Image (cartoon, rainbow, N blue to C red; front, side):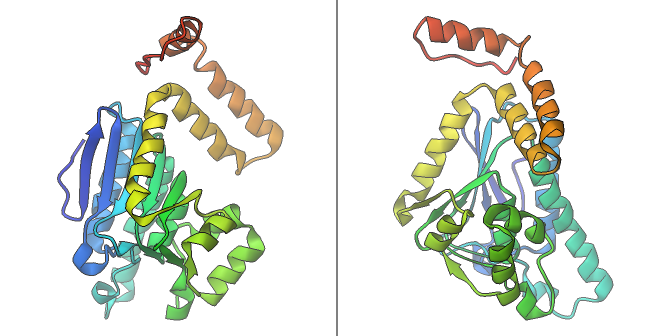
Length: 264
């Protein structure tokens, strides 16, 4: 796993826990072309090899911005071709992040606008600081969400609320984001990372094959009918029956001790 990136800070916090930080604080952690390349490389690598990482927390550098969306200074005066080539990097990045077998948790430390908000929606779930603000203002700039926003937002908040958010382009608070289903939890500003890392640690302690299979099954649930989704669930379930981790989990339960999962 590469850990040195120009626009991302990648830290292995514990044996199985990774912290990824959008690291352009001087530009509000906005998405530029290099960040698109860096994210595509990072998320694409995990699809091939999880390197025994069992949970990933994503946040932004500083305490004001998670990610302000596309870097409009870099985009100013781009040709149509340049714009579309850059956007293709963002498209690949968000799809690869959603396809990442490892659970990805957003810790939204500040403003998450445009593409930043879309990346929150693409994570498996999200915690947010009280100071965090959200919005999809693309329509006020003559464009529209293009990083799965029109797909993931209706799934999170419902179609009618999603239309209000996207068609108005208006910002909203962390409390509203939680009420509507974008955030799982609103944390005190100084407690956000502590609480996000705590839930990530709990996930890391669970059986990694089970975690990955359950994530895949839940992702399929929103893309197909009930019985087809259930058929996928059973296939995912059966993948765990012959594992050492299943034997260890049951043995540990009966021996009244914490299981030691190996991912085998």
